[in-house]
Length: 311
Image 1 (spheres, helix red, strand yellow):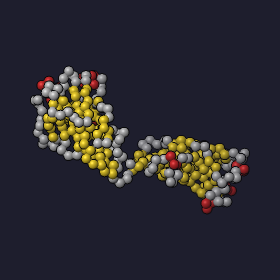
Image 2 (cartoon, one colour):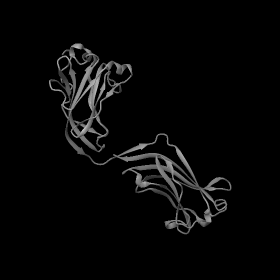
Image 3 (cartoon, rainbow, N blue to C red):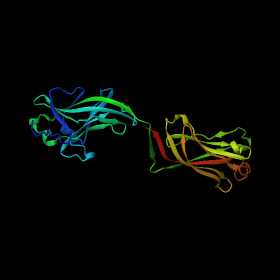
Image 4 (tube, helix red, strand yellow):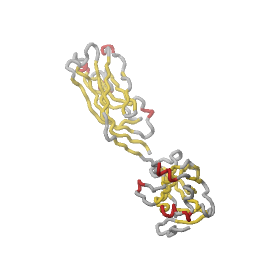
């Protein structure tokens, strides 16, 4: 072999091995067609090692996302099918191979220390696995008849679970959703509470809740009005939804919003309802311009600003 650098000053171990890779081998034919068809990388199928699934990712013209030039890039990637949560870690030692097809042995790169794979870092490897000059030089045997053979060995050394965490995702351009609910036969409302039809905002089902005779410290004197998650138990554990909302009762005579309340709230499975037990007095509610033809119209404006998920 020629044009190969065995200087380990960069901390990378470079060796020659007569033994093939223990866990996986990938034969890539017609490599020039990858470039012709604008395929920047090739991802292998999954293979198993150490109780986890992995894949090889090969960039024949270098990983442009990392500004790699005049080299091939090669990485070991933990498959998301078995990837740990962000709060868990898998430590592994790995070696990546390329076959010298002239001599039947392998050029091998290995980092001297184990690497930590977790939900936010699933890939490790070598941005500059080989220079294009070394890769394409016929005497090195790495690229013969437009074909190259790559491989991997992975040895999981330990696993560790850290404390729990969470991830907050704010919505860059939130959209307000408006829902209108027309309530008929107001004078005959005798149940403790009534729910609107469900409506969708931010991939979740919501509803309005009305207590015509009040609730809590407003029973008998005030109407209670709430916004609620319709299916709070469907939320994943640790999930919270930050919403800004306005609840209002329409002034039907002048088509103005006469009675309204605005609030922000983190909704969750255990805290799924927010509103007012004393939204308005029963006297104000029963005025003719609010209840017209024994009907009242209420509205909810809901805007989702952020979602927190458990890690």
